[in-house]
Image 1 (spheres, rainbow, N blue to C red):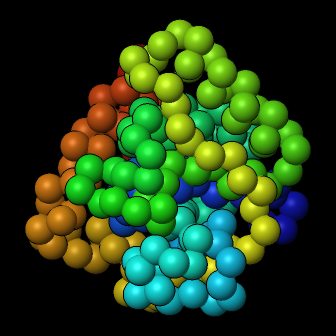
Image 2 (cartoon, helix red, strand yellow; image 1 turned 30 degrees about the vertical axis):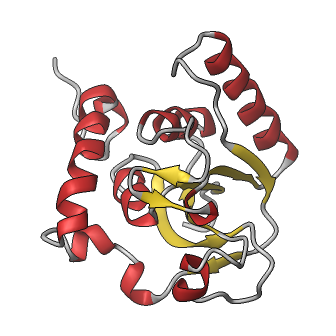
Length: 186
């Protein structure tokens, strides 16, 4: 196992419960951890981040095998399953902690994300400019244990029932070949 290549991608696309549920279903994704990044307070709590004063975004850290899924594939899913045109907002969740953000782990990820955003904007994919921030990944703080695998563990929680199934339906419809459950038809 130790010889398998692994890379990390960190995305903020609103509530981390939603983004975690989406990326957890992708092949080549080894783990998805909900947490906080992009702020100025060490070891922030959920309550502090929700207060909007720490500068952190709710993010997910994705560990993936680049031989099975590319960073570009992850970017494609990311931009398709949230609204990258609303500043500091996803649906009813409002504040800088819900900003659309890519926290790049290296210069290659930064270049790839910049190019991807330019292509989407040039094609007027969303009809409005993309406001997703590109930020260097400095620190990632794992969220409290009860936030991990939240949708899996709380599928009947009202917020989850309302917000997550539409994202998963879009994922299944548009990216079935990227899913762990995908099997090729003969």
